Image (cartoon, rainbow over all chains, first blue to last red; front, side):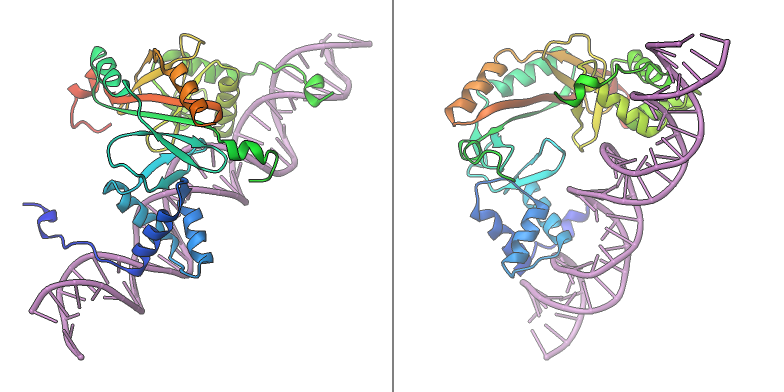
Length: 141
Length: 141
DNA sequence: CAGGAGTTTGAGAACGGTTGTCAACTTGGT
DNA sequence: ACCAAGTTGACAACCGTTCTCAAACTCCTG
């Protein structure tokens, strides 16, 4: 018998709703800090720590996808499908397209097995510059 | 005419040799801090900043491969081949096997093009637990 | 074998994203 | 309304990495 046996269900708070709502707005990957700022500017401020906590909770629950930007920041987005998939992400604006790596899954598993590795996990992400960002070229951000 | 025109060649120093040497020893991915500690324990100390600088230089020169661990740390290893390839890495000890993603390259390019993205880059890494680490199970580190 | 211009080093400060702390505040069941 | 337990947020702490800049070193030249 462990702790989870006695754990009460999560509560619905203004903050959680606000974060979830902010994510619902866009199809672009956003950092915790960006979301924090967005909420603040909306006049719907939520503490930074709370933003981080909420995003993590949503992530483990499978409600949002997380990925690491090329410089190590965690980016979040509410994804359409809950099944496993990958992303083609604009490194400039964060806009993303969901894609499936056709054979990637079994390829990963078989390569792993062939070398005696177990518990194989894989990261497959595509980075590029989207059409819109290509358009407004040297523009800052 | 830019600066590079006037830049002198890099110099060989004890520190650079030491870092390169430390990398030559192992087939495992190592963090900058691990290498720094390794050198120190060898009595061949090199400043941490220098370790970082040297690793970066080696990386841009294509002499070492870099990848990000699952928790965001940069890991370095001197790889056998200079051509593009991917890795199957033990998340416990860093031991790695070089692999090639058969069709990954062109798949990435075509998926990118199909969505109007340019300058496509891809990250494909496999994480698992190697046979040796599976053996000494609950052992710390 | 100096001399010296220009490169490299390293200790420590600074940085930026993220997590920990803990008293005050909510939420939801009764 | 009351209360036990979950949640919040301002702030400090953390951790990997980069910056700073005076001192040390390389290597070219005479």
